[in-house]
Image (cartoon, rainbow, N blue to C red; front, side):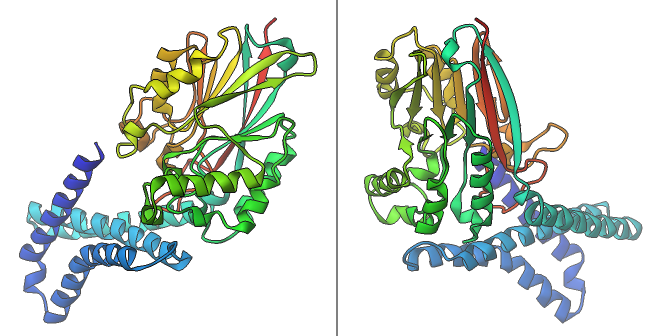
Length: 392
């Protein structure tokens, strides 16, 4: 789905540039033609420069480079809107329509600029607490009222070296006084070096009665950015070691038993991001034997909470065993959600919030950080407080 949309965008943009050139710009003055050519070549030249810089540069991308990339993406959106809208006006081929569509193009560009700036400078930093209460017949009495602080997709590179957001997140989680803190994956974006000692100290200060448990997301699996410079196993081990030093319990296709004061137990299961969808992060996978091995050794009588970074794993997990509560992230509503509608719906069957089928529940948190575009529009960063209730 992503590749066809990308190719369609490139084709539409190229056609629009040609239409505007042939029907208008080539008739203008030399200076106007030069400015237009610079704008047309600006888009592909930056992409080439980005690729070359990535090949030459050693180590993690500097924060200024990530910020420059974000500005480029905004300019790309604005130029695309202006060129495509104006090309439509030129195709109508009347002077009045040309003036009208020029006005529309300018207005849309201005609107997009304001919305993206709002999402980047304001809403991206407005961390909210989403509270959810879930009742179960099979939840042991000893865990009635258990409070889970769920967070995901921090993407430390999107913090641009600033510790304020991570500190705010840590303080809010600790203020919840949760019984357990659960991180659903994607701590970094492109390199384990994003997890600096300063960030590690902040994240390691998260407190909960049973501790902090985590899984690996697709960006933690050594397939993006600077992690490609070393074998995947090395990148994963580096991130694993750092999480252990933080005091986090990283679960990799394994489970832990949590014991209440009265002796009741529940299982906490953590599964890796599936190998078969590492290059196709929207696909719903058929899960391999590694996952079956986890649940085949888990007593069916135990209530279980499963942490799975990608929500599209839910169907496969349910085929292997009962999933009382599955906790995911990954999608972050594609950082845009207006009136309950998001572009994420084009790619995912389940993309945000609570889903229920029979007695099984899936909750997808919208995450903390951002990827590609450093903005959130209608989908602010989210920490989810889930309270479990026993119907017994």
